[in-house]
Amino acid sequence: MADDSVPVAVPQHIWLVGGAAMLWGLYGLVNYVMVQVKIAQYMAGKSADDLANFIGPSILSHAMWLIMIFAMLSGAVLLLMHRRHAVLAFWVTFLAMLGMRAENLVLFGLDFFYAYSVNALIFIGLSFAIIIGLIVYSSRMKARGVLH
Image 1 (tube, helix red, strand yellow):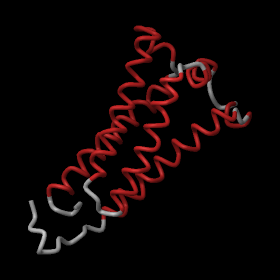
Image 2 (image 1 turned 90 degrees about the vertical axis):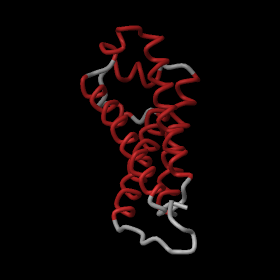
Image 3 (image 1 turned 180 degrees about the horizontal axis):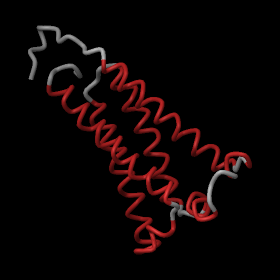
């Protein structure tokens, strides 16, 4: 752990990572709003199975979806502000994602993999990869003393 009396140089890539995390979180927010408002042009690009999974889930899924979005946005802001709580926010995002997917497995069973389009499954995998990457990145920045 870095000594608090000696300032740690902030790497320039933290702005890139924090900005990308913010854009990813904002995409999630736009996606949620578009699905909830049912914007026809936006919904036209989704398969029937994907639409059923977006609109049909329980209130618990919707709550976890919102927690994911706002924890992600909070983590991005905290990362840009060089705050160590970014790690916690990204963990909350990951746990909400895991909870939402666990509920999907309970609802759909092994049909989970057939209930979504291939594109949706790729997106889910990409989402997990991004949040795991952000957890690792922010944890390393915290360990180096960049996040305080």
